[in-house]
Amino acid sequence: QSLPAVVLLDGFPRALDQALAFESALGTPELALFFECPQEEMRARLTSRGTTSGRADDEEGVIQRRLRTFVDTSMPVVDMYQTRGSLRRIDATGSQQQVYERFVHTLVHAGVLPQQLFASPTASVSSSGGTCS
Image (tube, rainbow, N blue to C red; front, top):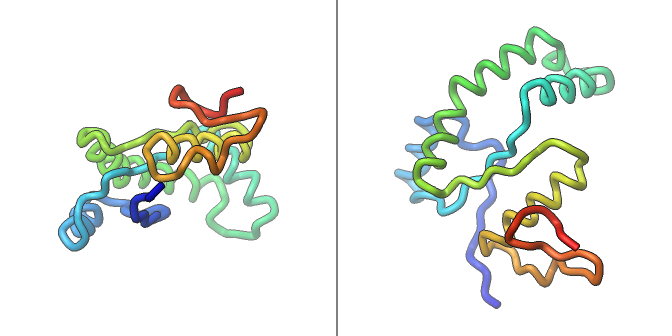
């Protein structure tokens, strides 16, 4: 089976002007992924990471500003791709394994990855979401 050429850009575009410049230079993406996570969960994860990372930007005041900036600048990009029908939302709550399984499911369902790579005797990816028995 022939798979489409795929380029995965993590965390880009972050703002509408970047998205439009990208599209002007390279074309409109057929698929955009958005890992959806409640702000309370993101705040808790970043605060927890801050206890071990040593990063100065993992403290409450900076986290609050980053989340506000994200909503103000990045959500218009999410909204644009949603309106165009190219956005796929992935529930980013739960364990890393659960989020990974949702990610794989989304790529399989979008035709980016072949399902047989991820099929096992006990689990397969279905079109209804997640990994199913």
